[in-house]
Length: 280
Image 1: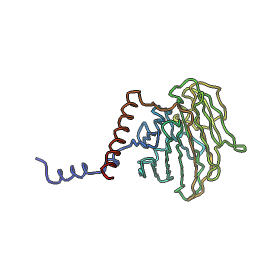
Image 2 (image 1 turned 135 degrees about the horizontal axis):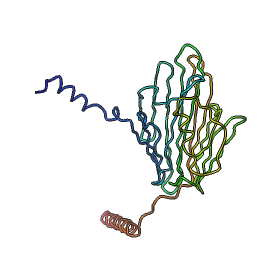
Image 3 (image 1 turned 90 degrees about the horizontal axis):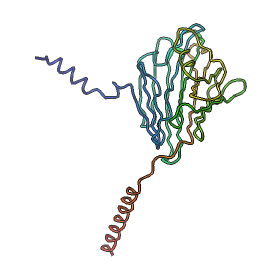
Image 4 (image 1 turned 45 degrees about the vertical axis):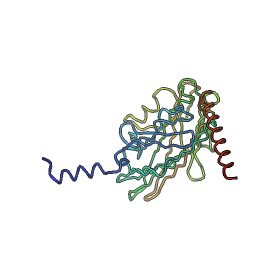
């Protein structure tokens, strides 16, 4: 027989908000949805569905403090505090004794036939120590535009002698990443490749510096790297915008569906007409 204390504890667990136990969150807006796994072994932005078609295999962040390896995924800083601000806005915060990392995601989807969608990521890394730190921040992205993986191409965009973003294309479908220079500096390095080279370099035991090279085409993926010194109590701000264009329009209703829609509209009009006649 369970004690009253055991029963009480069970009731407390059952009454906890479901969001406190979840690592997976889904943002929705217009024609789009984005899945974000904030913690665990499979952490990352794991899908971006536009017009019913997934455009993204994986996107996530790594960091390193100092010149020696390895890099660590951003979610290993600590258990995240998650705030689902609205159906399209999510904020995650990770805190350790050295740094606090906050990421604010905001999704803006287009109309069903527009083929466009936009995801902004506002990142703030605060130095919590009493001295400056040499900080290295990485983003990795693997998009499968148009739902296919093997026929994409990529190009870097420059901002002075640094890098302001990446464009990836598949026919008429394109994803553009823009690093806002108004509130954050452009990336220090980039790399566009195929296979698992970039991802493996972020997950091994040695320090990574992206090599500023690009492959021609194929199943491409890419990375951006920021190398900065953050003063004690200072904050690195990175404001990024990912924009997808040219996705094939979503499905249109079948002819039988259109017939039902027209019939319903006609019935609604007849009802309004009869109602109006009774009121005259």
